Length: 149
Image: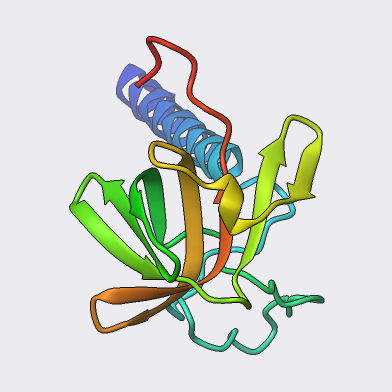
């Protein structure tokens, strides 16, 4: 075997090792971001039915995972709450069917609209009707510690 052939075999082996390292790194990044047991990404977008073979949810969530509005209360009346958001003030309508909960360190407890005052930090879940949010659930969040934006 000539020296040229040895170099070619060595170069081929080095390329194979690099390909295996890239694959291992890519797998590590994928598992680090998504975990081993989570459902893989799929081409169906949010709100679309799962693709065949996808893992169906056993219990559909009663509320969306993310609130529609989050921020301090700017003003409150009998049937409306104005919430300061990064996009500006937003209006949410409330009624007797609107649930109110207070988040605690060890869970949540029932609360009422009377517990919400100007400056209270809240998360509002519901459906938009035009530019107004019809609130179904309001969660009173604990105040932020000083110096924490």
